[in-house]
Image (cartoon, rainbow, N blue to C red; front, side, top):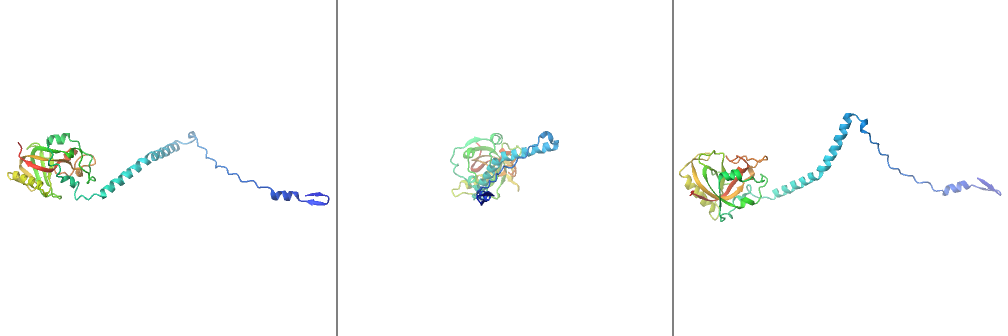
Amino acid sequence: MRRRSGITYQASAVQSTHRQQPLPVAFPPARAAKTPLSWLSDSAILAKIRSEANRTVKRNWALPATIVCVLALSREGRAQTCNEPFYRWSEKVDESLASVIPRRTSIATMLGQWAPLALMRHDECAPRAGRELRTYSVIAWIRRVKKRETDGDWHVEITSQANSSPTTCVVAEIPPTSPNGNFGQARADLDAMLASAQVAGDGEVTPPIHVRLVGAAFYDGFHHTAVGGASGHGSCNSSGRALWELHPIYFVRSPP
């Protein structure tokens, strides 16, 4: 308070009412100091290393895991739109290859040189591709015939020789009779050849019948196992190559 010529001034009070208050200053939180590894125990060091490794692995695997999920959903979507009554049924009854000039092959070649395809049970709608677009002529011996398959096919097991092990076989299938009679004629010709043999209840043919079959190559991935083998494919489960079939059979002939 000041006094001049009888007048008292409260200068400090007036000045204080107009003085701006300082704004608070925000300081970033202090970062915790890293503990030198030399101060940690052996168990603590191991825990720290494992924690860093886990973070790295999770970061590196995040994108691949996402891709796998997308592919799985895509495959599931395709499976849901498939209306085939049986595994790859449209390909099994395909008659468009009946007019293709057949290539000669043998059971030994099919089992020893034809590489398995990547087709599996979930590929029920897979179209024909590669070797499956070709027709082959095979001379072999009929060892077993089953006429009461679930899908209506005639299931025929053939081997290279009459005395070959029955498990070293390849499957040939004749679908149900088609409107143009191709499969019906093949069945009739097979029955005529089987008339000279005995067919047991399990389909075993005695004695084996010498035959020439003409049909399209087909890979039956329904019986393909996760480890690359074959399972549930009649007697023909020697390897993943044994899933190669002649399917459908267009012509049944006597060998030359």
